[in-house]
Length: 151
Image 1 (cartoon, rainbow, N blue to C red):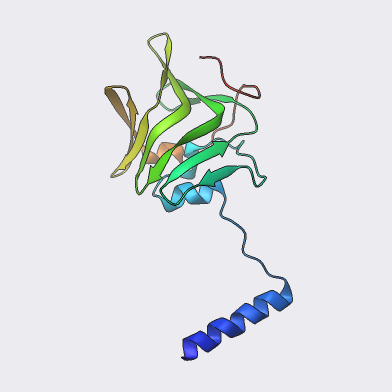
Image 2: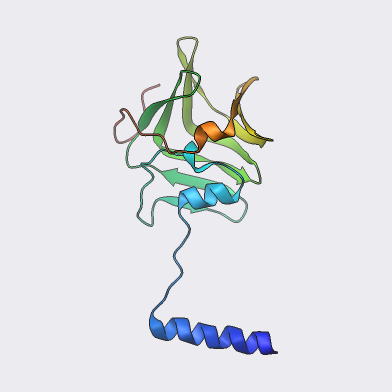
């Protein structure tokens, strides 16, 4: 009963002082599922349209523009201005809008999972592991435009 009274009192305090709880950023949501924030570039839209996350983990994320950068290991990566998929604890599946340049072609990254201290990137039947700490910092985009990247 004491906890309920405290909760009610705190609610009135927050309401009367105008304190509000902001929605977590896309970076914070990503981290809450076990991923480093550096999987996303710095260009996630800050407006209320930045991302949508359903209760079942389906998400849609919007960047200010499409984006290119190189990840450790010299792989060039492209993000469309719209990224979608499903997120769960330590996995991103059914991804669209993220591509890697391999063998002179752009390939869709289908899934990313956390495996110990590594991230595993799935591209069709192939996968590659990278140390998760390579993604501690948000990458800076070296190019891109509004809309979809050219594949």
